[in-house]
Amino acid sequence: MRTRNPLSLAKTGGLLLLVAVGITMLYPLLWMVGTAVKTNDPEALLREGAGAGVFPDDRNILRNLFPPVWHWENFPEVFRVSPFARYYFNSAVIALVVTAGQLATSSLAAYAFGRLIFRGREKIFFLYLATLMIPASVTLIPLFIMMSWAGLVDSYFVLLVPPMFSAYGTFMLRQFFKGIPDELEEAACIDGCNALMRFVHVVLPLSGPALATLGIFTFLGNWQSFLYPLVMVSSDRLKTIPLGLLDFVDQNSANWPLLMAASIWSILPVIGIFLFGQRFFVSGTRLGGVKG
Amino acid sequence: MRNKPLTPWLFLAPSVLGFAAFTLFPIVFSLALAFCAWDLFRPPRWVGWDNFQQLLGFTVREAPSIPPGLGVILLAVCLVLAAGVILRLRGGVRLGLAVGIAAVAIFVLLQFLEPVNERFWYYTGNTFYLLLGLPLSMACSLGLAVLLNQTIPGRNLFRLAFFLPSIVGGVGIYLLWKWIFNTDYGLINSVISLVHPAGGPAWLESRAWAKNALIIMNIWATAGGANMVLYLAALQNVDPQLHEAACLDGAGKWHQFLAITWPMVSPTTAFILIMGIIGGFQGGFDAAYVMTRGGPAGATTTLSYFIYENGFRYFYMGRAAAASWILFVMVLGLSLLNWKWMSSRITY
Image 1: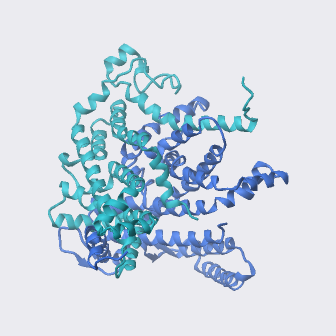
Image 2 (image 1 turned 135 degrees about the vertical axis):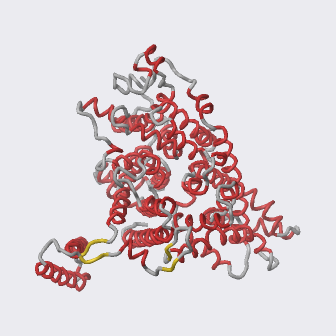
Image 3 (image 1 turned 30 degrees about the vertical axis):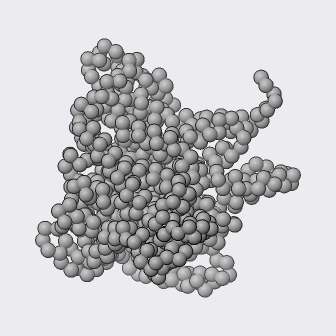
């Protein structure tokens, strides 16, 4: 044992506690994987014993975490028994388009609010801020009625266009844009750049992290969005993954391995984005929270 | 920055148009809707305050459960006490006393009045009950942040592991927890049956335990997430000299936490609490819809679920709109209260 950097007793205790908490936090997710590779097939259960299923005789959660034989076929099975590929496509397209749209509209408006001078700026911005307090359920009902008047309920339009505008995104980016030093834009001004050129060539390139953070959170929010599509969409063709999963539950109610396999499919992209964009998650939580 | 007068409006145009069409107009619409009765099939009918009356109103009980004479006396006592508290508030009368008197007064009044819509109050109670998870989750976040705020091996790995539950979410995770709370073969009851052969409660199928199950799930999902990161950032801003000085004065770890750490992170606590109340009070729909459908017997129905059911299942558009405005006023009131209460306690 090396004694160069000995851990004190308290620190060792803390470390053990952290390990315990970490295991507790991750065990449900491990259990999800373990359930997904079990089976509900009566023949397989006879062959491999009750431990291969989700209703084992032995209830020790350590011993029955994983089955004796891993049934990977549950994962492709999800796509065979339901239009999951369609749901995946819808979710991906909607999340991507809405994110791109929100970044575009929010950053343009944030530039005007944060860096341009015009009459009524503070008043309009206050209006944006005021609506942040209003619950989504207030606007959902009238929005549904408006969309049904326009005959747009149950269409890609309703899934793509209304969510593209975000008061929160505008607010967040405005705060960031305000922090960019004026001198940079002044220099560009002297070089003959108009506002659009300054926005594209000076402000946007300096705002990479803020845009990435907003983009990631918007993407995840839309990927997991449930109530809005639930209200607005009813045909299979337009359903997103959360809605598809719910149908899946109705059709395979006790087939936990298949349900868990489908659930894993639904969170895989999220985990991928998380591992890829870790630093933006940390910075994102700080954007609103730190006070001087 | 100098610019042509039209330029800012070109930048604003897409956002403002969308904002006006999909946020501002619906808000105004919703306000009007709250005073109408409308099922989308027949034309809407103006009903004034009826929707609010149906949700919040009280009627006089036909048979009061305590004798009216006694009730009047109790109410009078409450009024006198309340007047006393108000008059002596500057003399440092405890807030607790005022709350106690209010509780007794409400109790007495309820002997004479009964709510028009008992379910609505029950669901409001559910929403408040679920908010109890917030302080628990915050305590976990702070605890984890304190543990992580020292030089230990694998710090970043821990942070990643704790953060993961907060980032995976949505229907898939609610399904996972529905399975975890399964009475006979779920993860939690399997663990309980190891130490307690009679097994655990029926969680999501039990009126008494369903809300607690949702709270447990929420703690799992939020304890290690953004709140922990915020606390960690706040802890890193605490000057280590403060702890050294306290150490020299012979203060123990717990004492140091109470006297230094807790006050120093109080702005963060206030921020998390306010955001948590705003979010939590409006929330609860997704989990309830996927895991329990608001049941058993309405035990997990929150206000947002109530609004959804009225609007999109029964097509009581007006009543749903009215309920959503009541929700808004409650959130606003709670945030203001919280703000007032915290601002006297925050140490900057």
